[in-house]
Image (cartoon, rainbow over all chains, first blue to last red; front, side, top):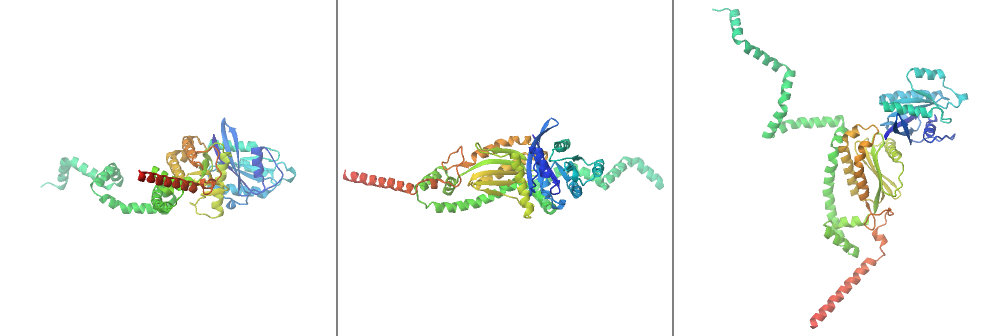
Length: 165
Length: 327
């Protein structure tokens, strides 16, 4: 059984914990409880005919990498950046996080989740912005922890990219 | 008289091979690359030969080696620390053992003055086994049981191996290992600890979690009760062996724990041996912590019984002496 450590990064209240809960337990709750420090979960998946254990480090959201505990990222095989489609500032945050993490962790695969797609009336991030980022090479998934849209696909894609390395 | 040109021609005719040889020798002497190549072919043997004759080579190299070590430590102290990790533990322990031996001797003398039925029994055991009396006392008064051992990859927090004693309700080893690593990181970050400092003990009620660390691995042991400090030495030795024997596997680790399966029996053995109940025998269920033989023995029962036996012996001796004197 192969194990891989992955980290959830992003601003506060973007839905990192909800995405993990949806992926691991297939559950969702509207109640918001901020994560303090780090929360760890695990899920076993089958990818490319082999079993893989994902140990998911859900790290408390901050507004800049310098506040993120870099030590938590040690040894990670991949990471998931999460932005909130109803707040543009969260996208700026993940772009900054990716710049810093990318420098510190070369060649570690990542995917970007544009979360809260279910809140259609409150979207703040333009679709054109997302399309442009995809053209620039970002691996982006439009997700909703509430409905489960694209959550499993995003984690599976990251798993595939980690196994390819 | 011949002209210089004619002399040169004559010289060339007669000495051409030698001139060529001299020219090649000059080239070899003047070219550092060729000289280095030639020296590299003989330097190993030269060192061996020179070293066998006297100590001058060692004396000559000593200042250079000292400077190299000094520079290495200045540049990256961790490199040298990691390199000597497998041997530094035994060296330190040997030194500490000597100091402890002296301390135990002193304690032995003090305890020898203790007079009780249990004390006499332990004194007999000490004579029989050849171990110091203080060590026997410590052995009988500690009650503990090692319940779980986690071998964890330090960088990722992923579990390499996990063993648990029978009837122990163990949680998901992957999650526990990751959380232990996260706690370590959290404490170091929050309290600005030095880079090489580490969390060593966690206490939770009657449970103690000992955390031993090496450059690339962590050995976390969950113990119920009051374990002897000597058990830490055993855990350190296990970790040093793992660092040494699984060097390549640790360097190449990418999430597959299969290469570490062979160390499982060692961890299992450590688990099965690391326990002591108040009966002195292995127990299936863990004994509650801090309950020693002294607490379970009724108060005053031992010494009273001894007095009775001593009194009976004295009376018997007196009677026998009286009978013999009258014969």
